[in-house]
Length: 423
Image 1 (cartoon, rainbow, N blue to C red):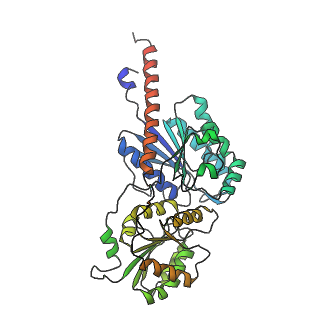
Image 2 (cartoon, rainbow, N blue to C red):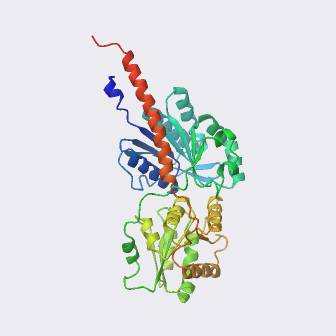
Image 3 (spheres, rainbow, N blue to C red):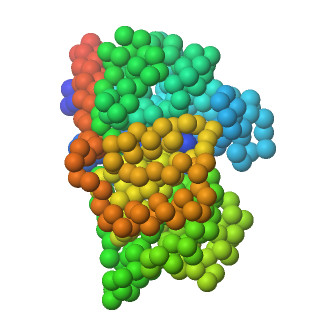
């Protein structure tokens, strides 16, 4: 290899995203990947993921995807295959080998692991160990959303599964996509002083995209001459567990309509079971409401709405916070406490309003929705959250990629100088 070739090492990042039954992790990792390529158009990014929707979100150039067999977390420590009629142990072994082979072949300068430091049921550990034993300059980074689950659940599961040990042994940096003053993740989940020194709170990660067709989104439901009707948009990300919330809204709609002229736009989500979606469609008959499976630009619908009602998944919540528009969050009941904790903490700061999922009786829903509409389409402007996380995260990752690729360049140059000249 000559010196010119040694200076042409492409900065490479690999991302691991475990998101077999939702959209949240893929949305967040895609936003970060897009920002990395925006800042360094020469970077190459490969994402390993098992989402059944594949490349659902619009991605940048130089970014490709490796699909793993999909698995589903049914409960703490309880995983199952989604599509293949094989045992979980067989699927797990296959995934483990695919991950190890892909990482060692790609040789990333940065490996960003989303959410699970050890991978689903420890599937990342052989890869992390192989990277460290190989002497590769790869920087290994863990990315954690603002809230994972109830502290006692995380502490118990991560201790049993070896997640704390994995972070201590293998990770160079931990990015926390949140605000320490809102939720001190290190303290709540009992990270060691060593790991706390490696942590960077980035602020909340929100897609850098902007609403593209707000007026068109509103015009789907209301004519431009209709200035009296209020548009309510209900959305829930993937929608796998959104049916109770959507049904409660439809049950309350006649009473809401008796007090205010409204139209309810329901975005069910691509993972809502077909029979549940059909049931919601049947319930809209005779009501000022319509059900859609999904939309291309949720930001436009949030901007178009007089009120957004959503579950409290990370990405939908961050898009709402960035808009500053009035919103009611109805978190999922479980199995994780993450959404309920997020909704409560954000409601305490007047960033959103909240209805507890165990309090979805019609009278409560009607009162909350009508009250929110009366309070106007925007939340208070004071003390808005820090949503610069996508830029901060990308900057940290780019610095690591530059350092690792420079080390590879230097190693290649030194090797080239040591090779004998051809006769």
